[in-house]
Amino acid sequence: MSDAFVSVEDRGAVRIVTMTGVPRRGNPMSPELARALLAALAEAMADADVRAVVLAGTATHFCVGADLVDVARLRGVQAILDGWLDDLDSIRRMPKPIVAAVRGHAVGGGFELALYCDLIVAADDARFALPETGIGVIAGQGGSQRLIGMAGRAIAADLILTGRELSGLEARSHGIAARAVPANEVLDAAIGMADAIARRSAPAVAFAREVILEASEGSLRQSLRIERLLASVVLDTAEAKTRIGDFLERRQAAKPAGGRS
Image: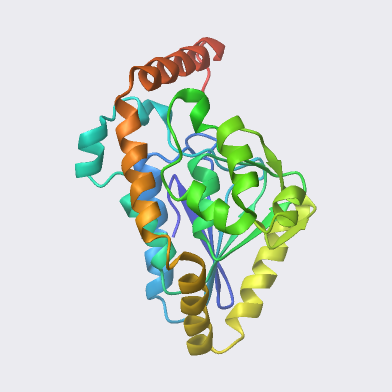
């Protein structure tokens, strides 16, 4: 399977799903990319020959999160009623292990997308960030809650409240990434990890994942719901509208005439 947004390749029992950087190199999480990504993952889950999945981006961008052009159109209450952010949450409940191969930038919802996966293999120089408060909104796909569970309150607060970037090496040291390797080794390392999982007992892996999820997220359900509700409500603040508008204007002004982002 291949389309403008996602390409798929099999290596034995491992399915590699790659966000292609088309039509925009940062892989902003547009509705079109979300649909293509979820469809590709659903196909992998339904294929009996696939035992584990690697989710990758390009060499320079894993995913930069929600496209602010789309976010600027949202209204808080309607976003809640429409189930904004609910679809991608299904990744966390998919029945086969997913390993994120992160090179370059994993920003905002892109960082949260990596956190949906069972394991993260990061490039040493990968850049993880949750910059949402700088544009008047907050992370809404579990970033705050999962980071607290993985790295502790202090690190989570530092990243969320200041927007500081975390390198791949730092992500590993704080328990966010399972492994950090040179950028040119990330994909092979992630495939190797997925292949090692695929060679083990499928029922045992499935039950082990349930135990891990219960231990790490069983008590977080209410907090995740509150996070998602507040992420939607804050969209209606004047501050959010102003800051998102300013950001989009600066981005438009920075584009070369006739160029593509």
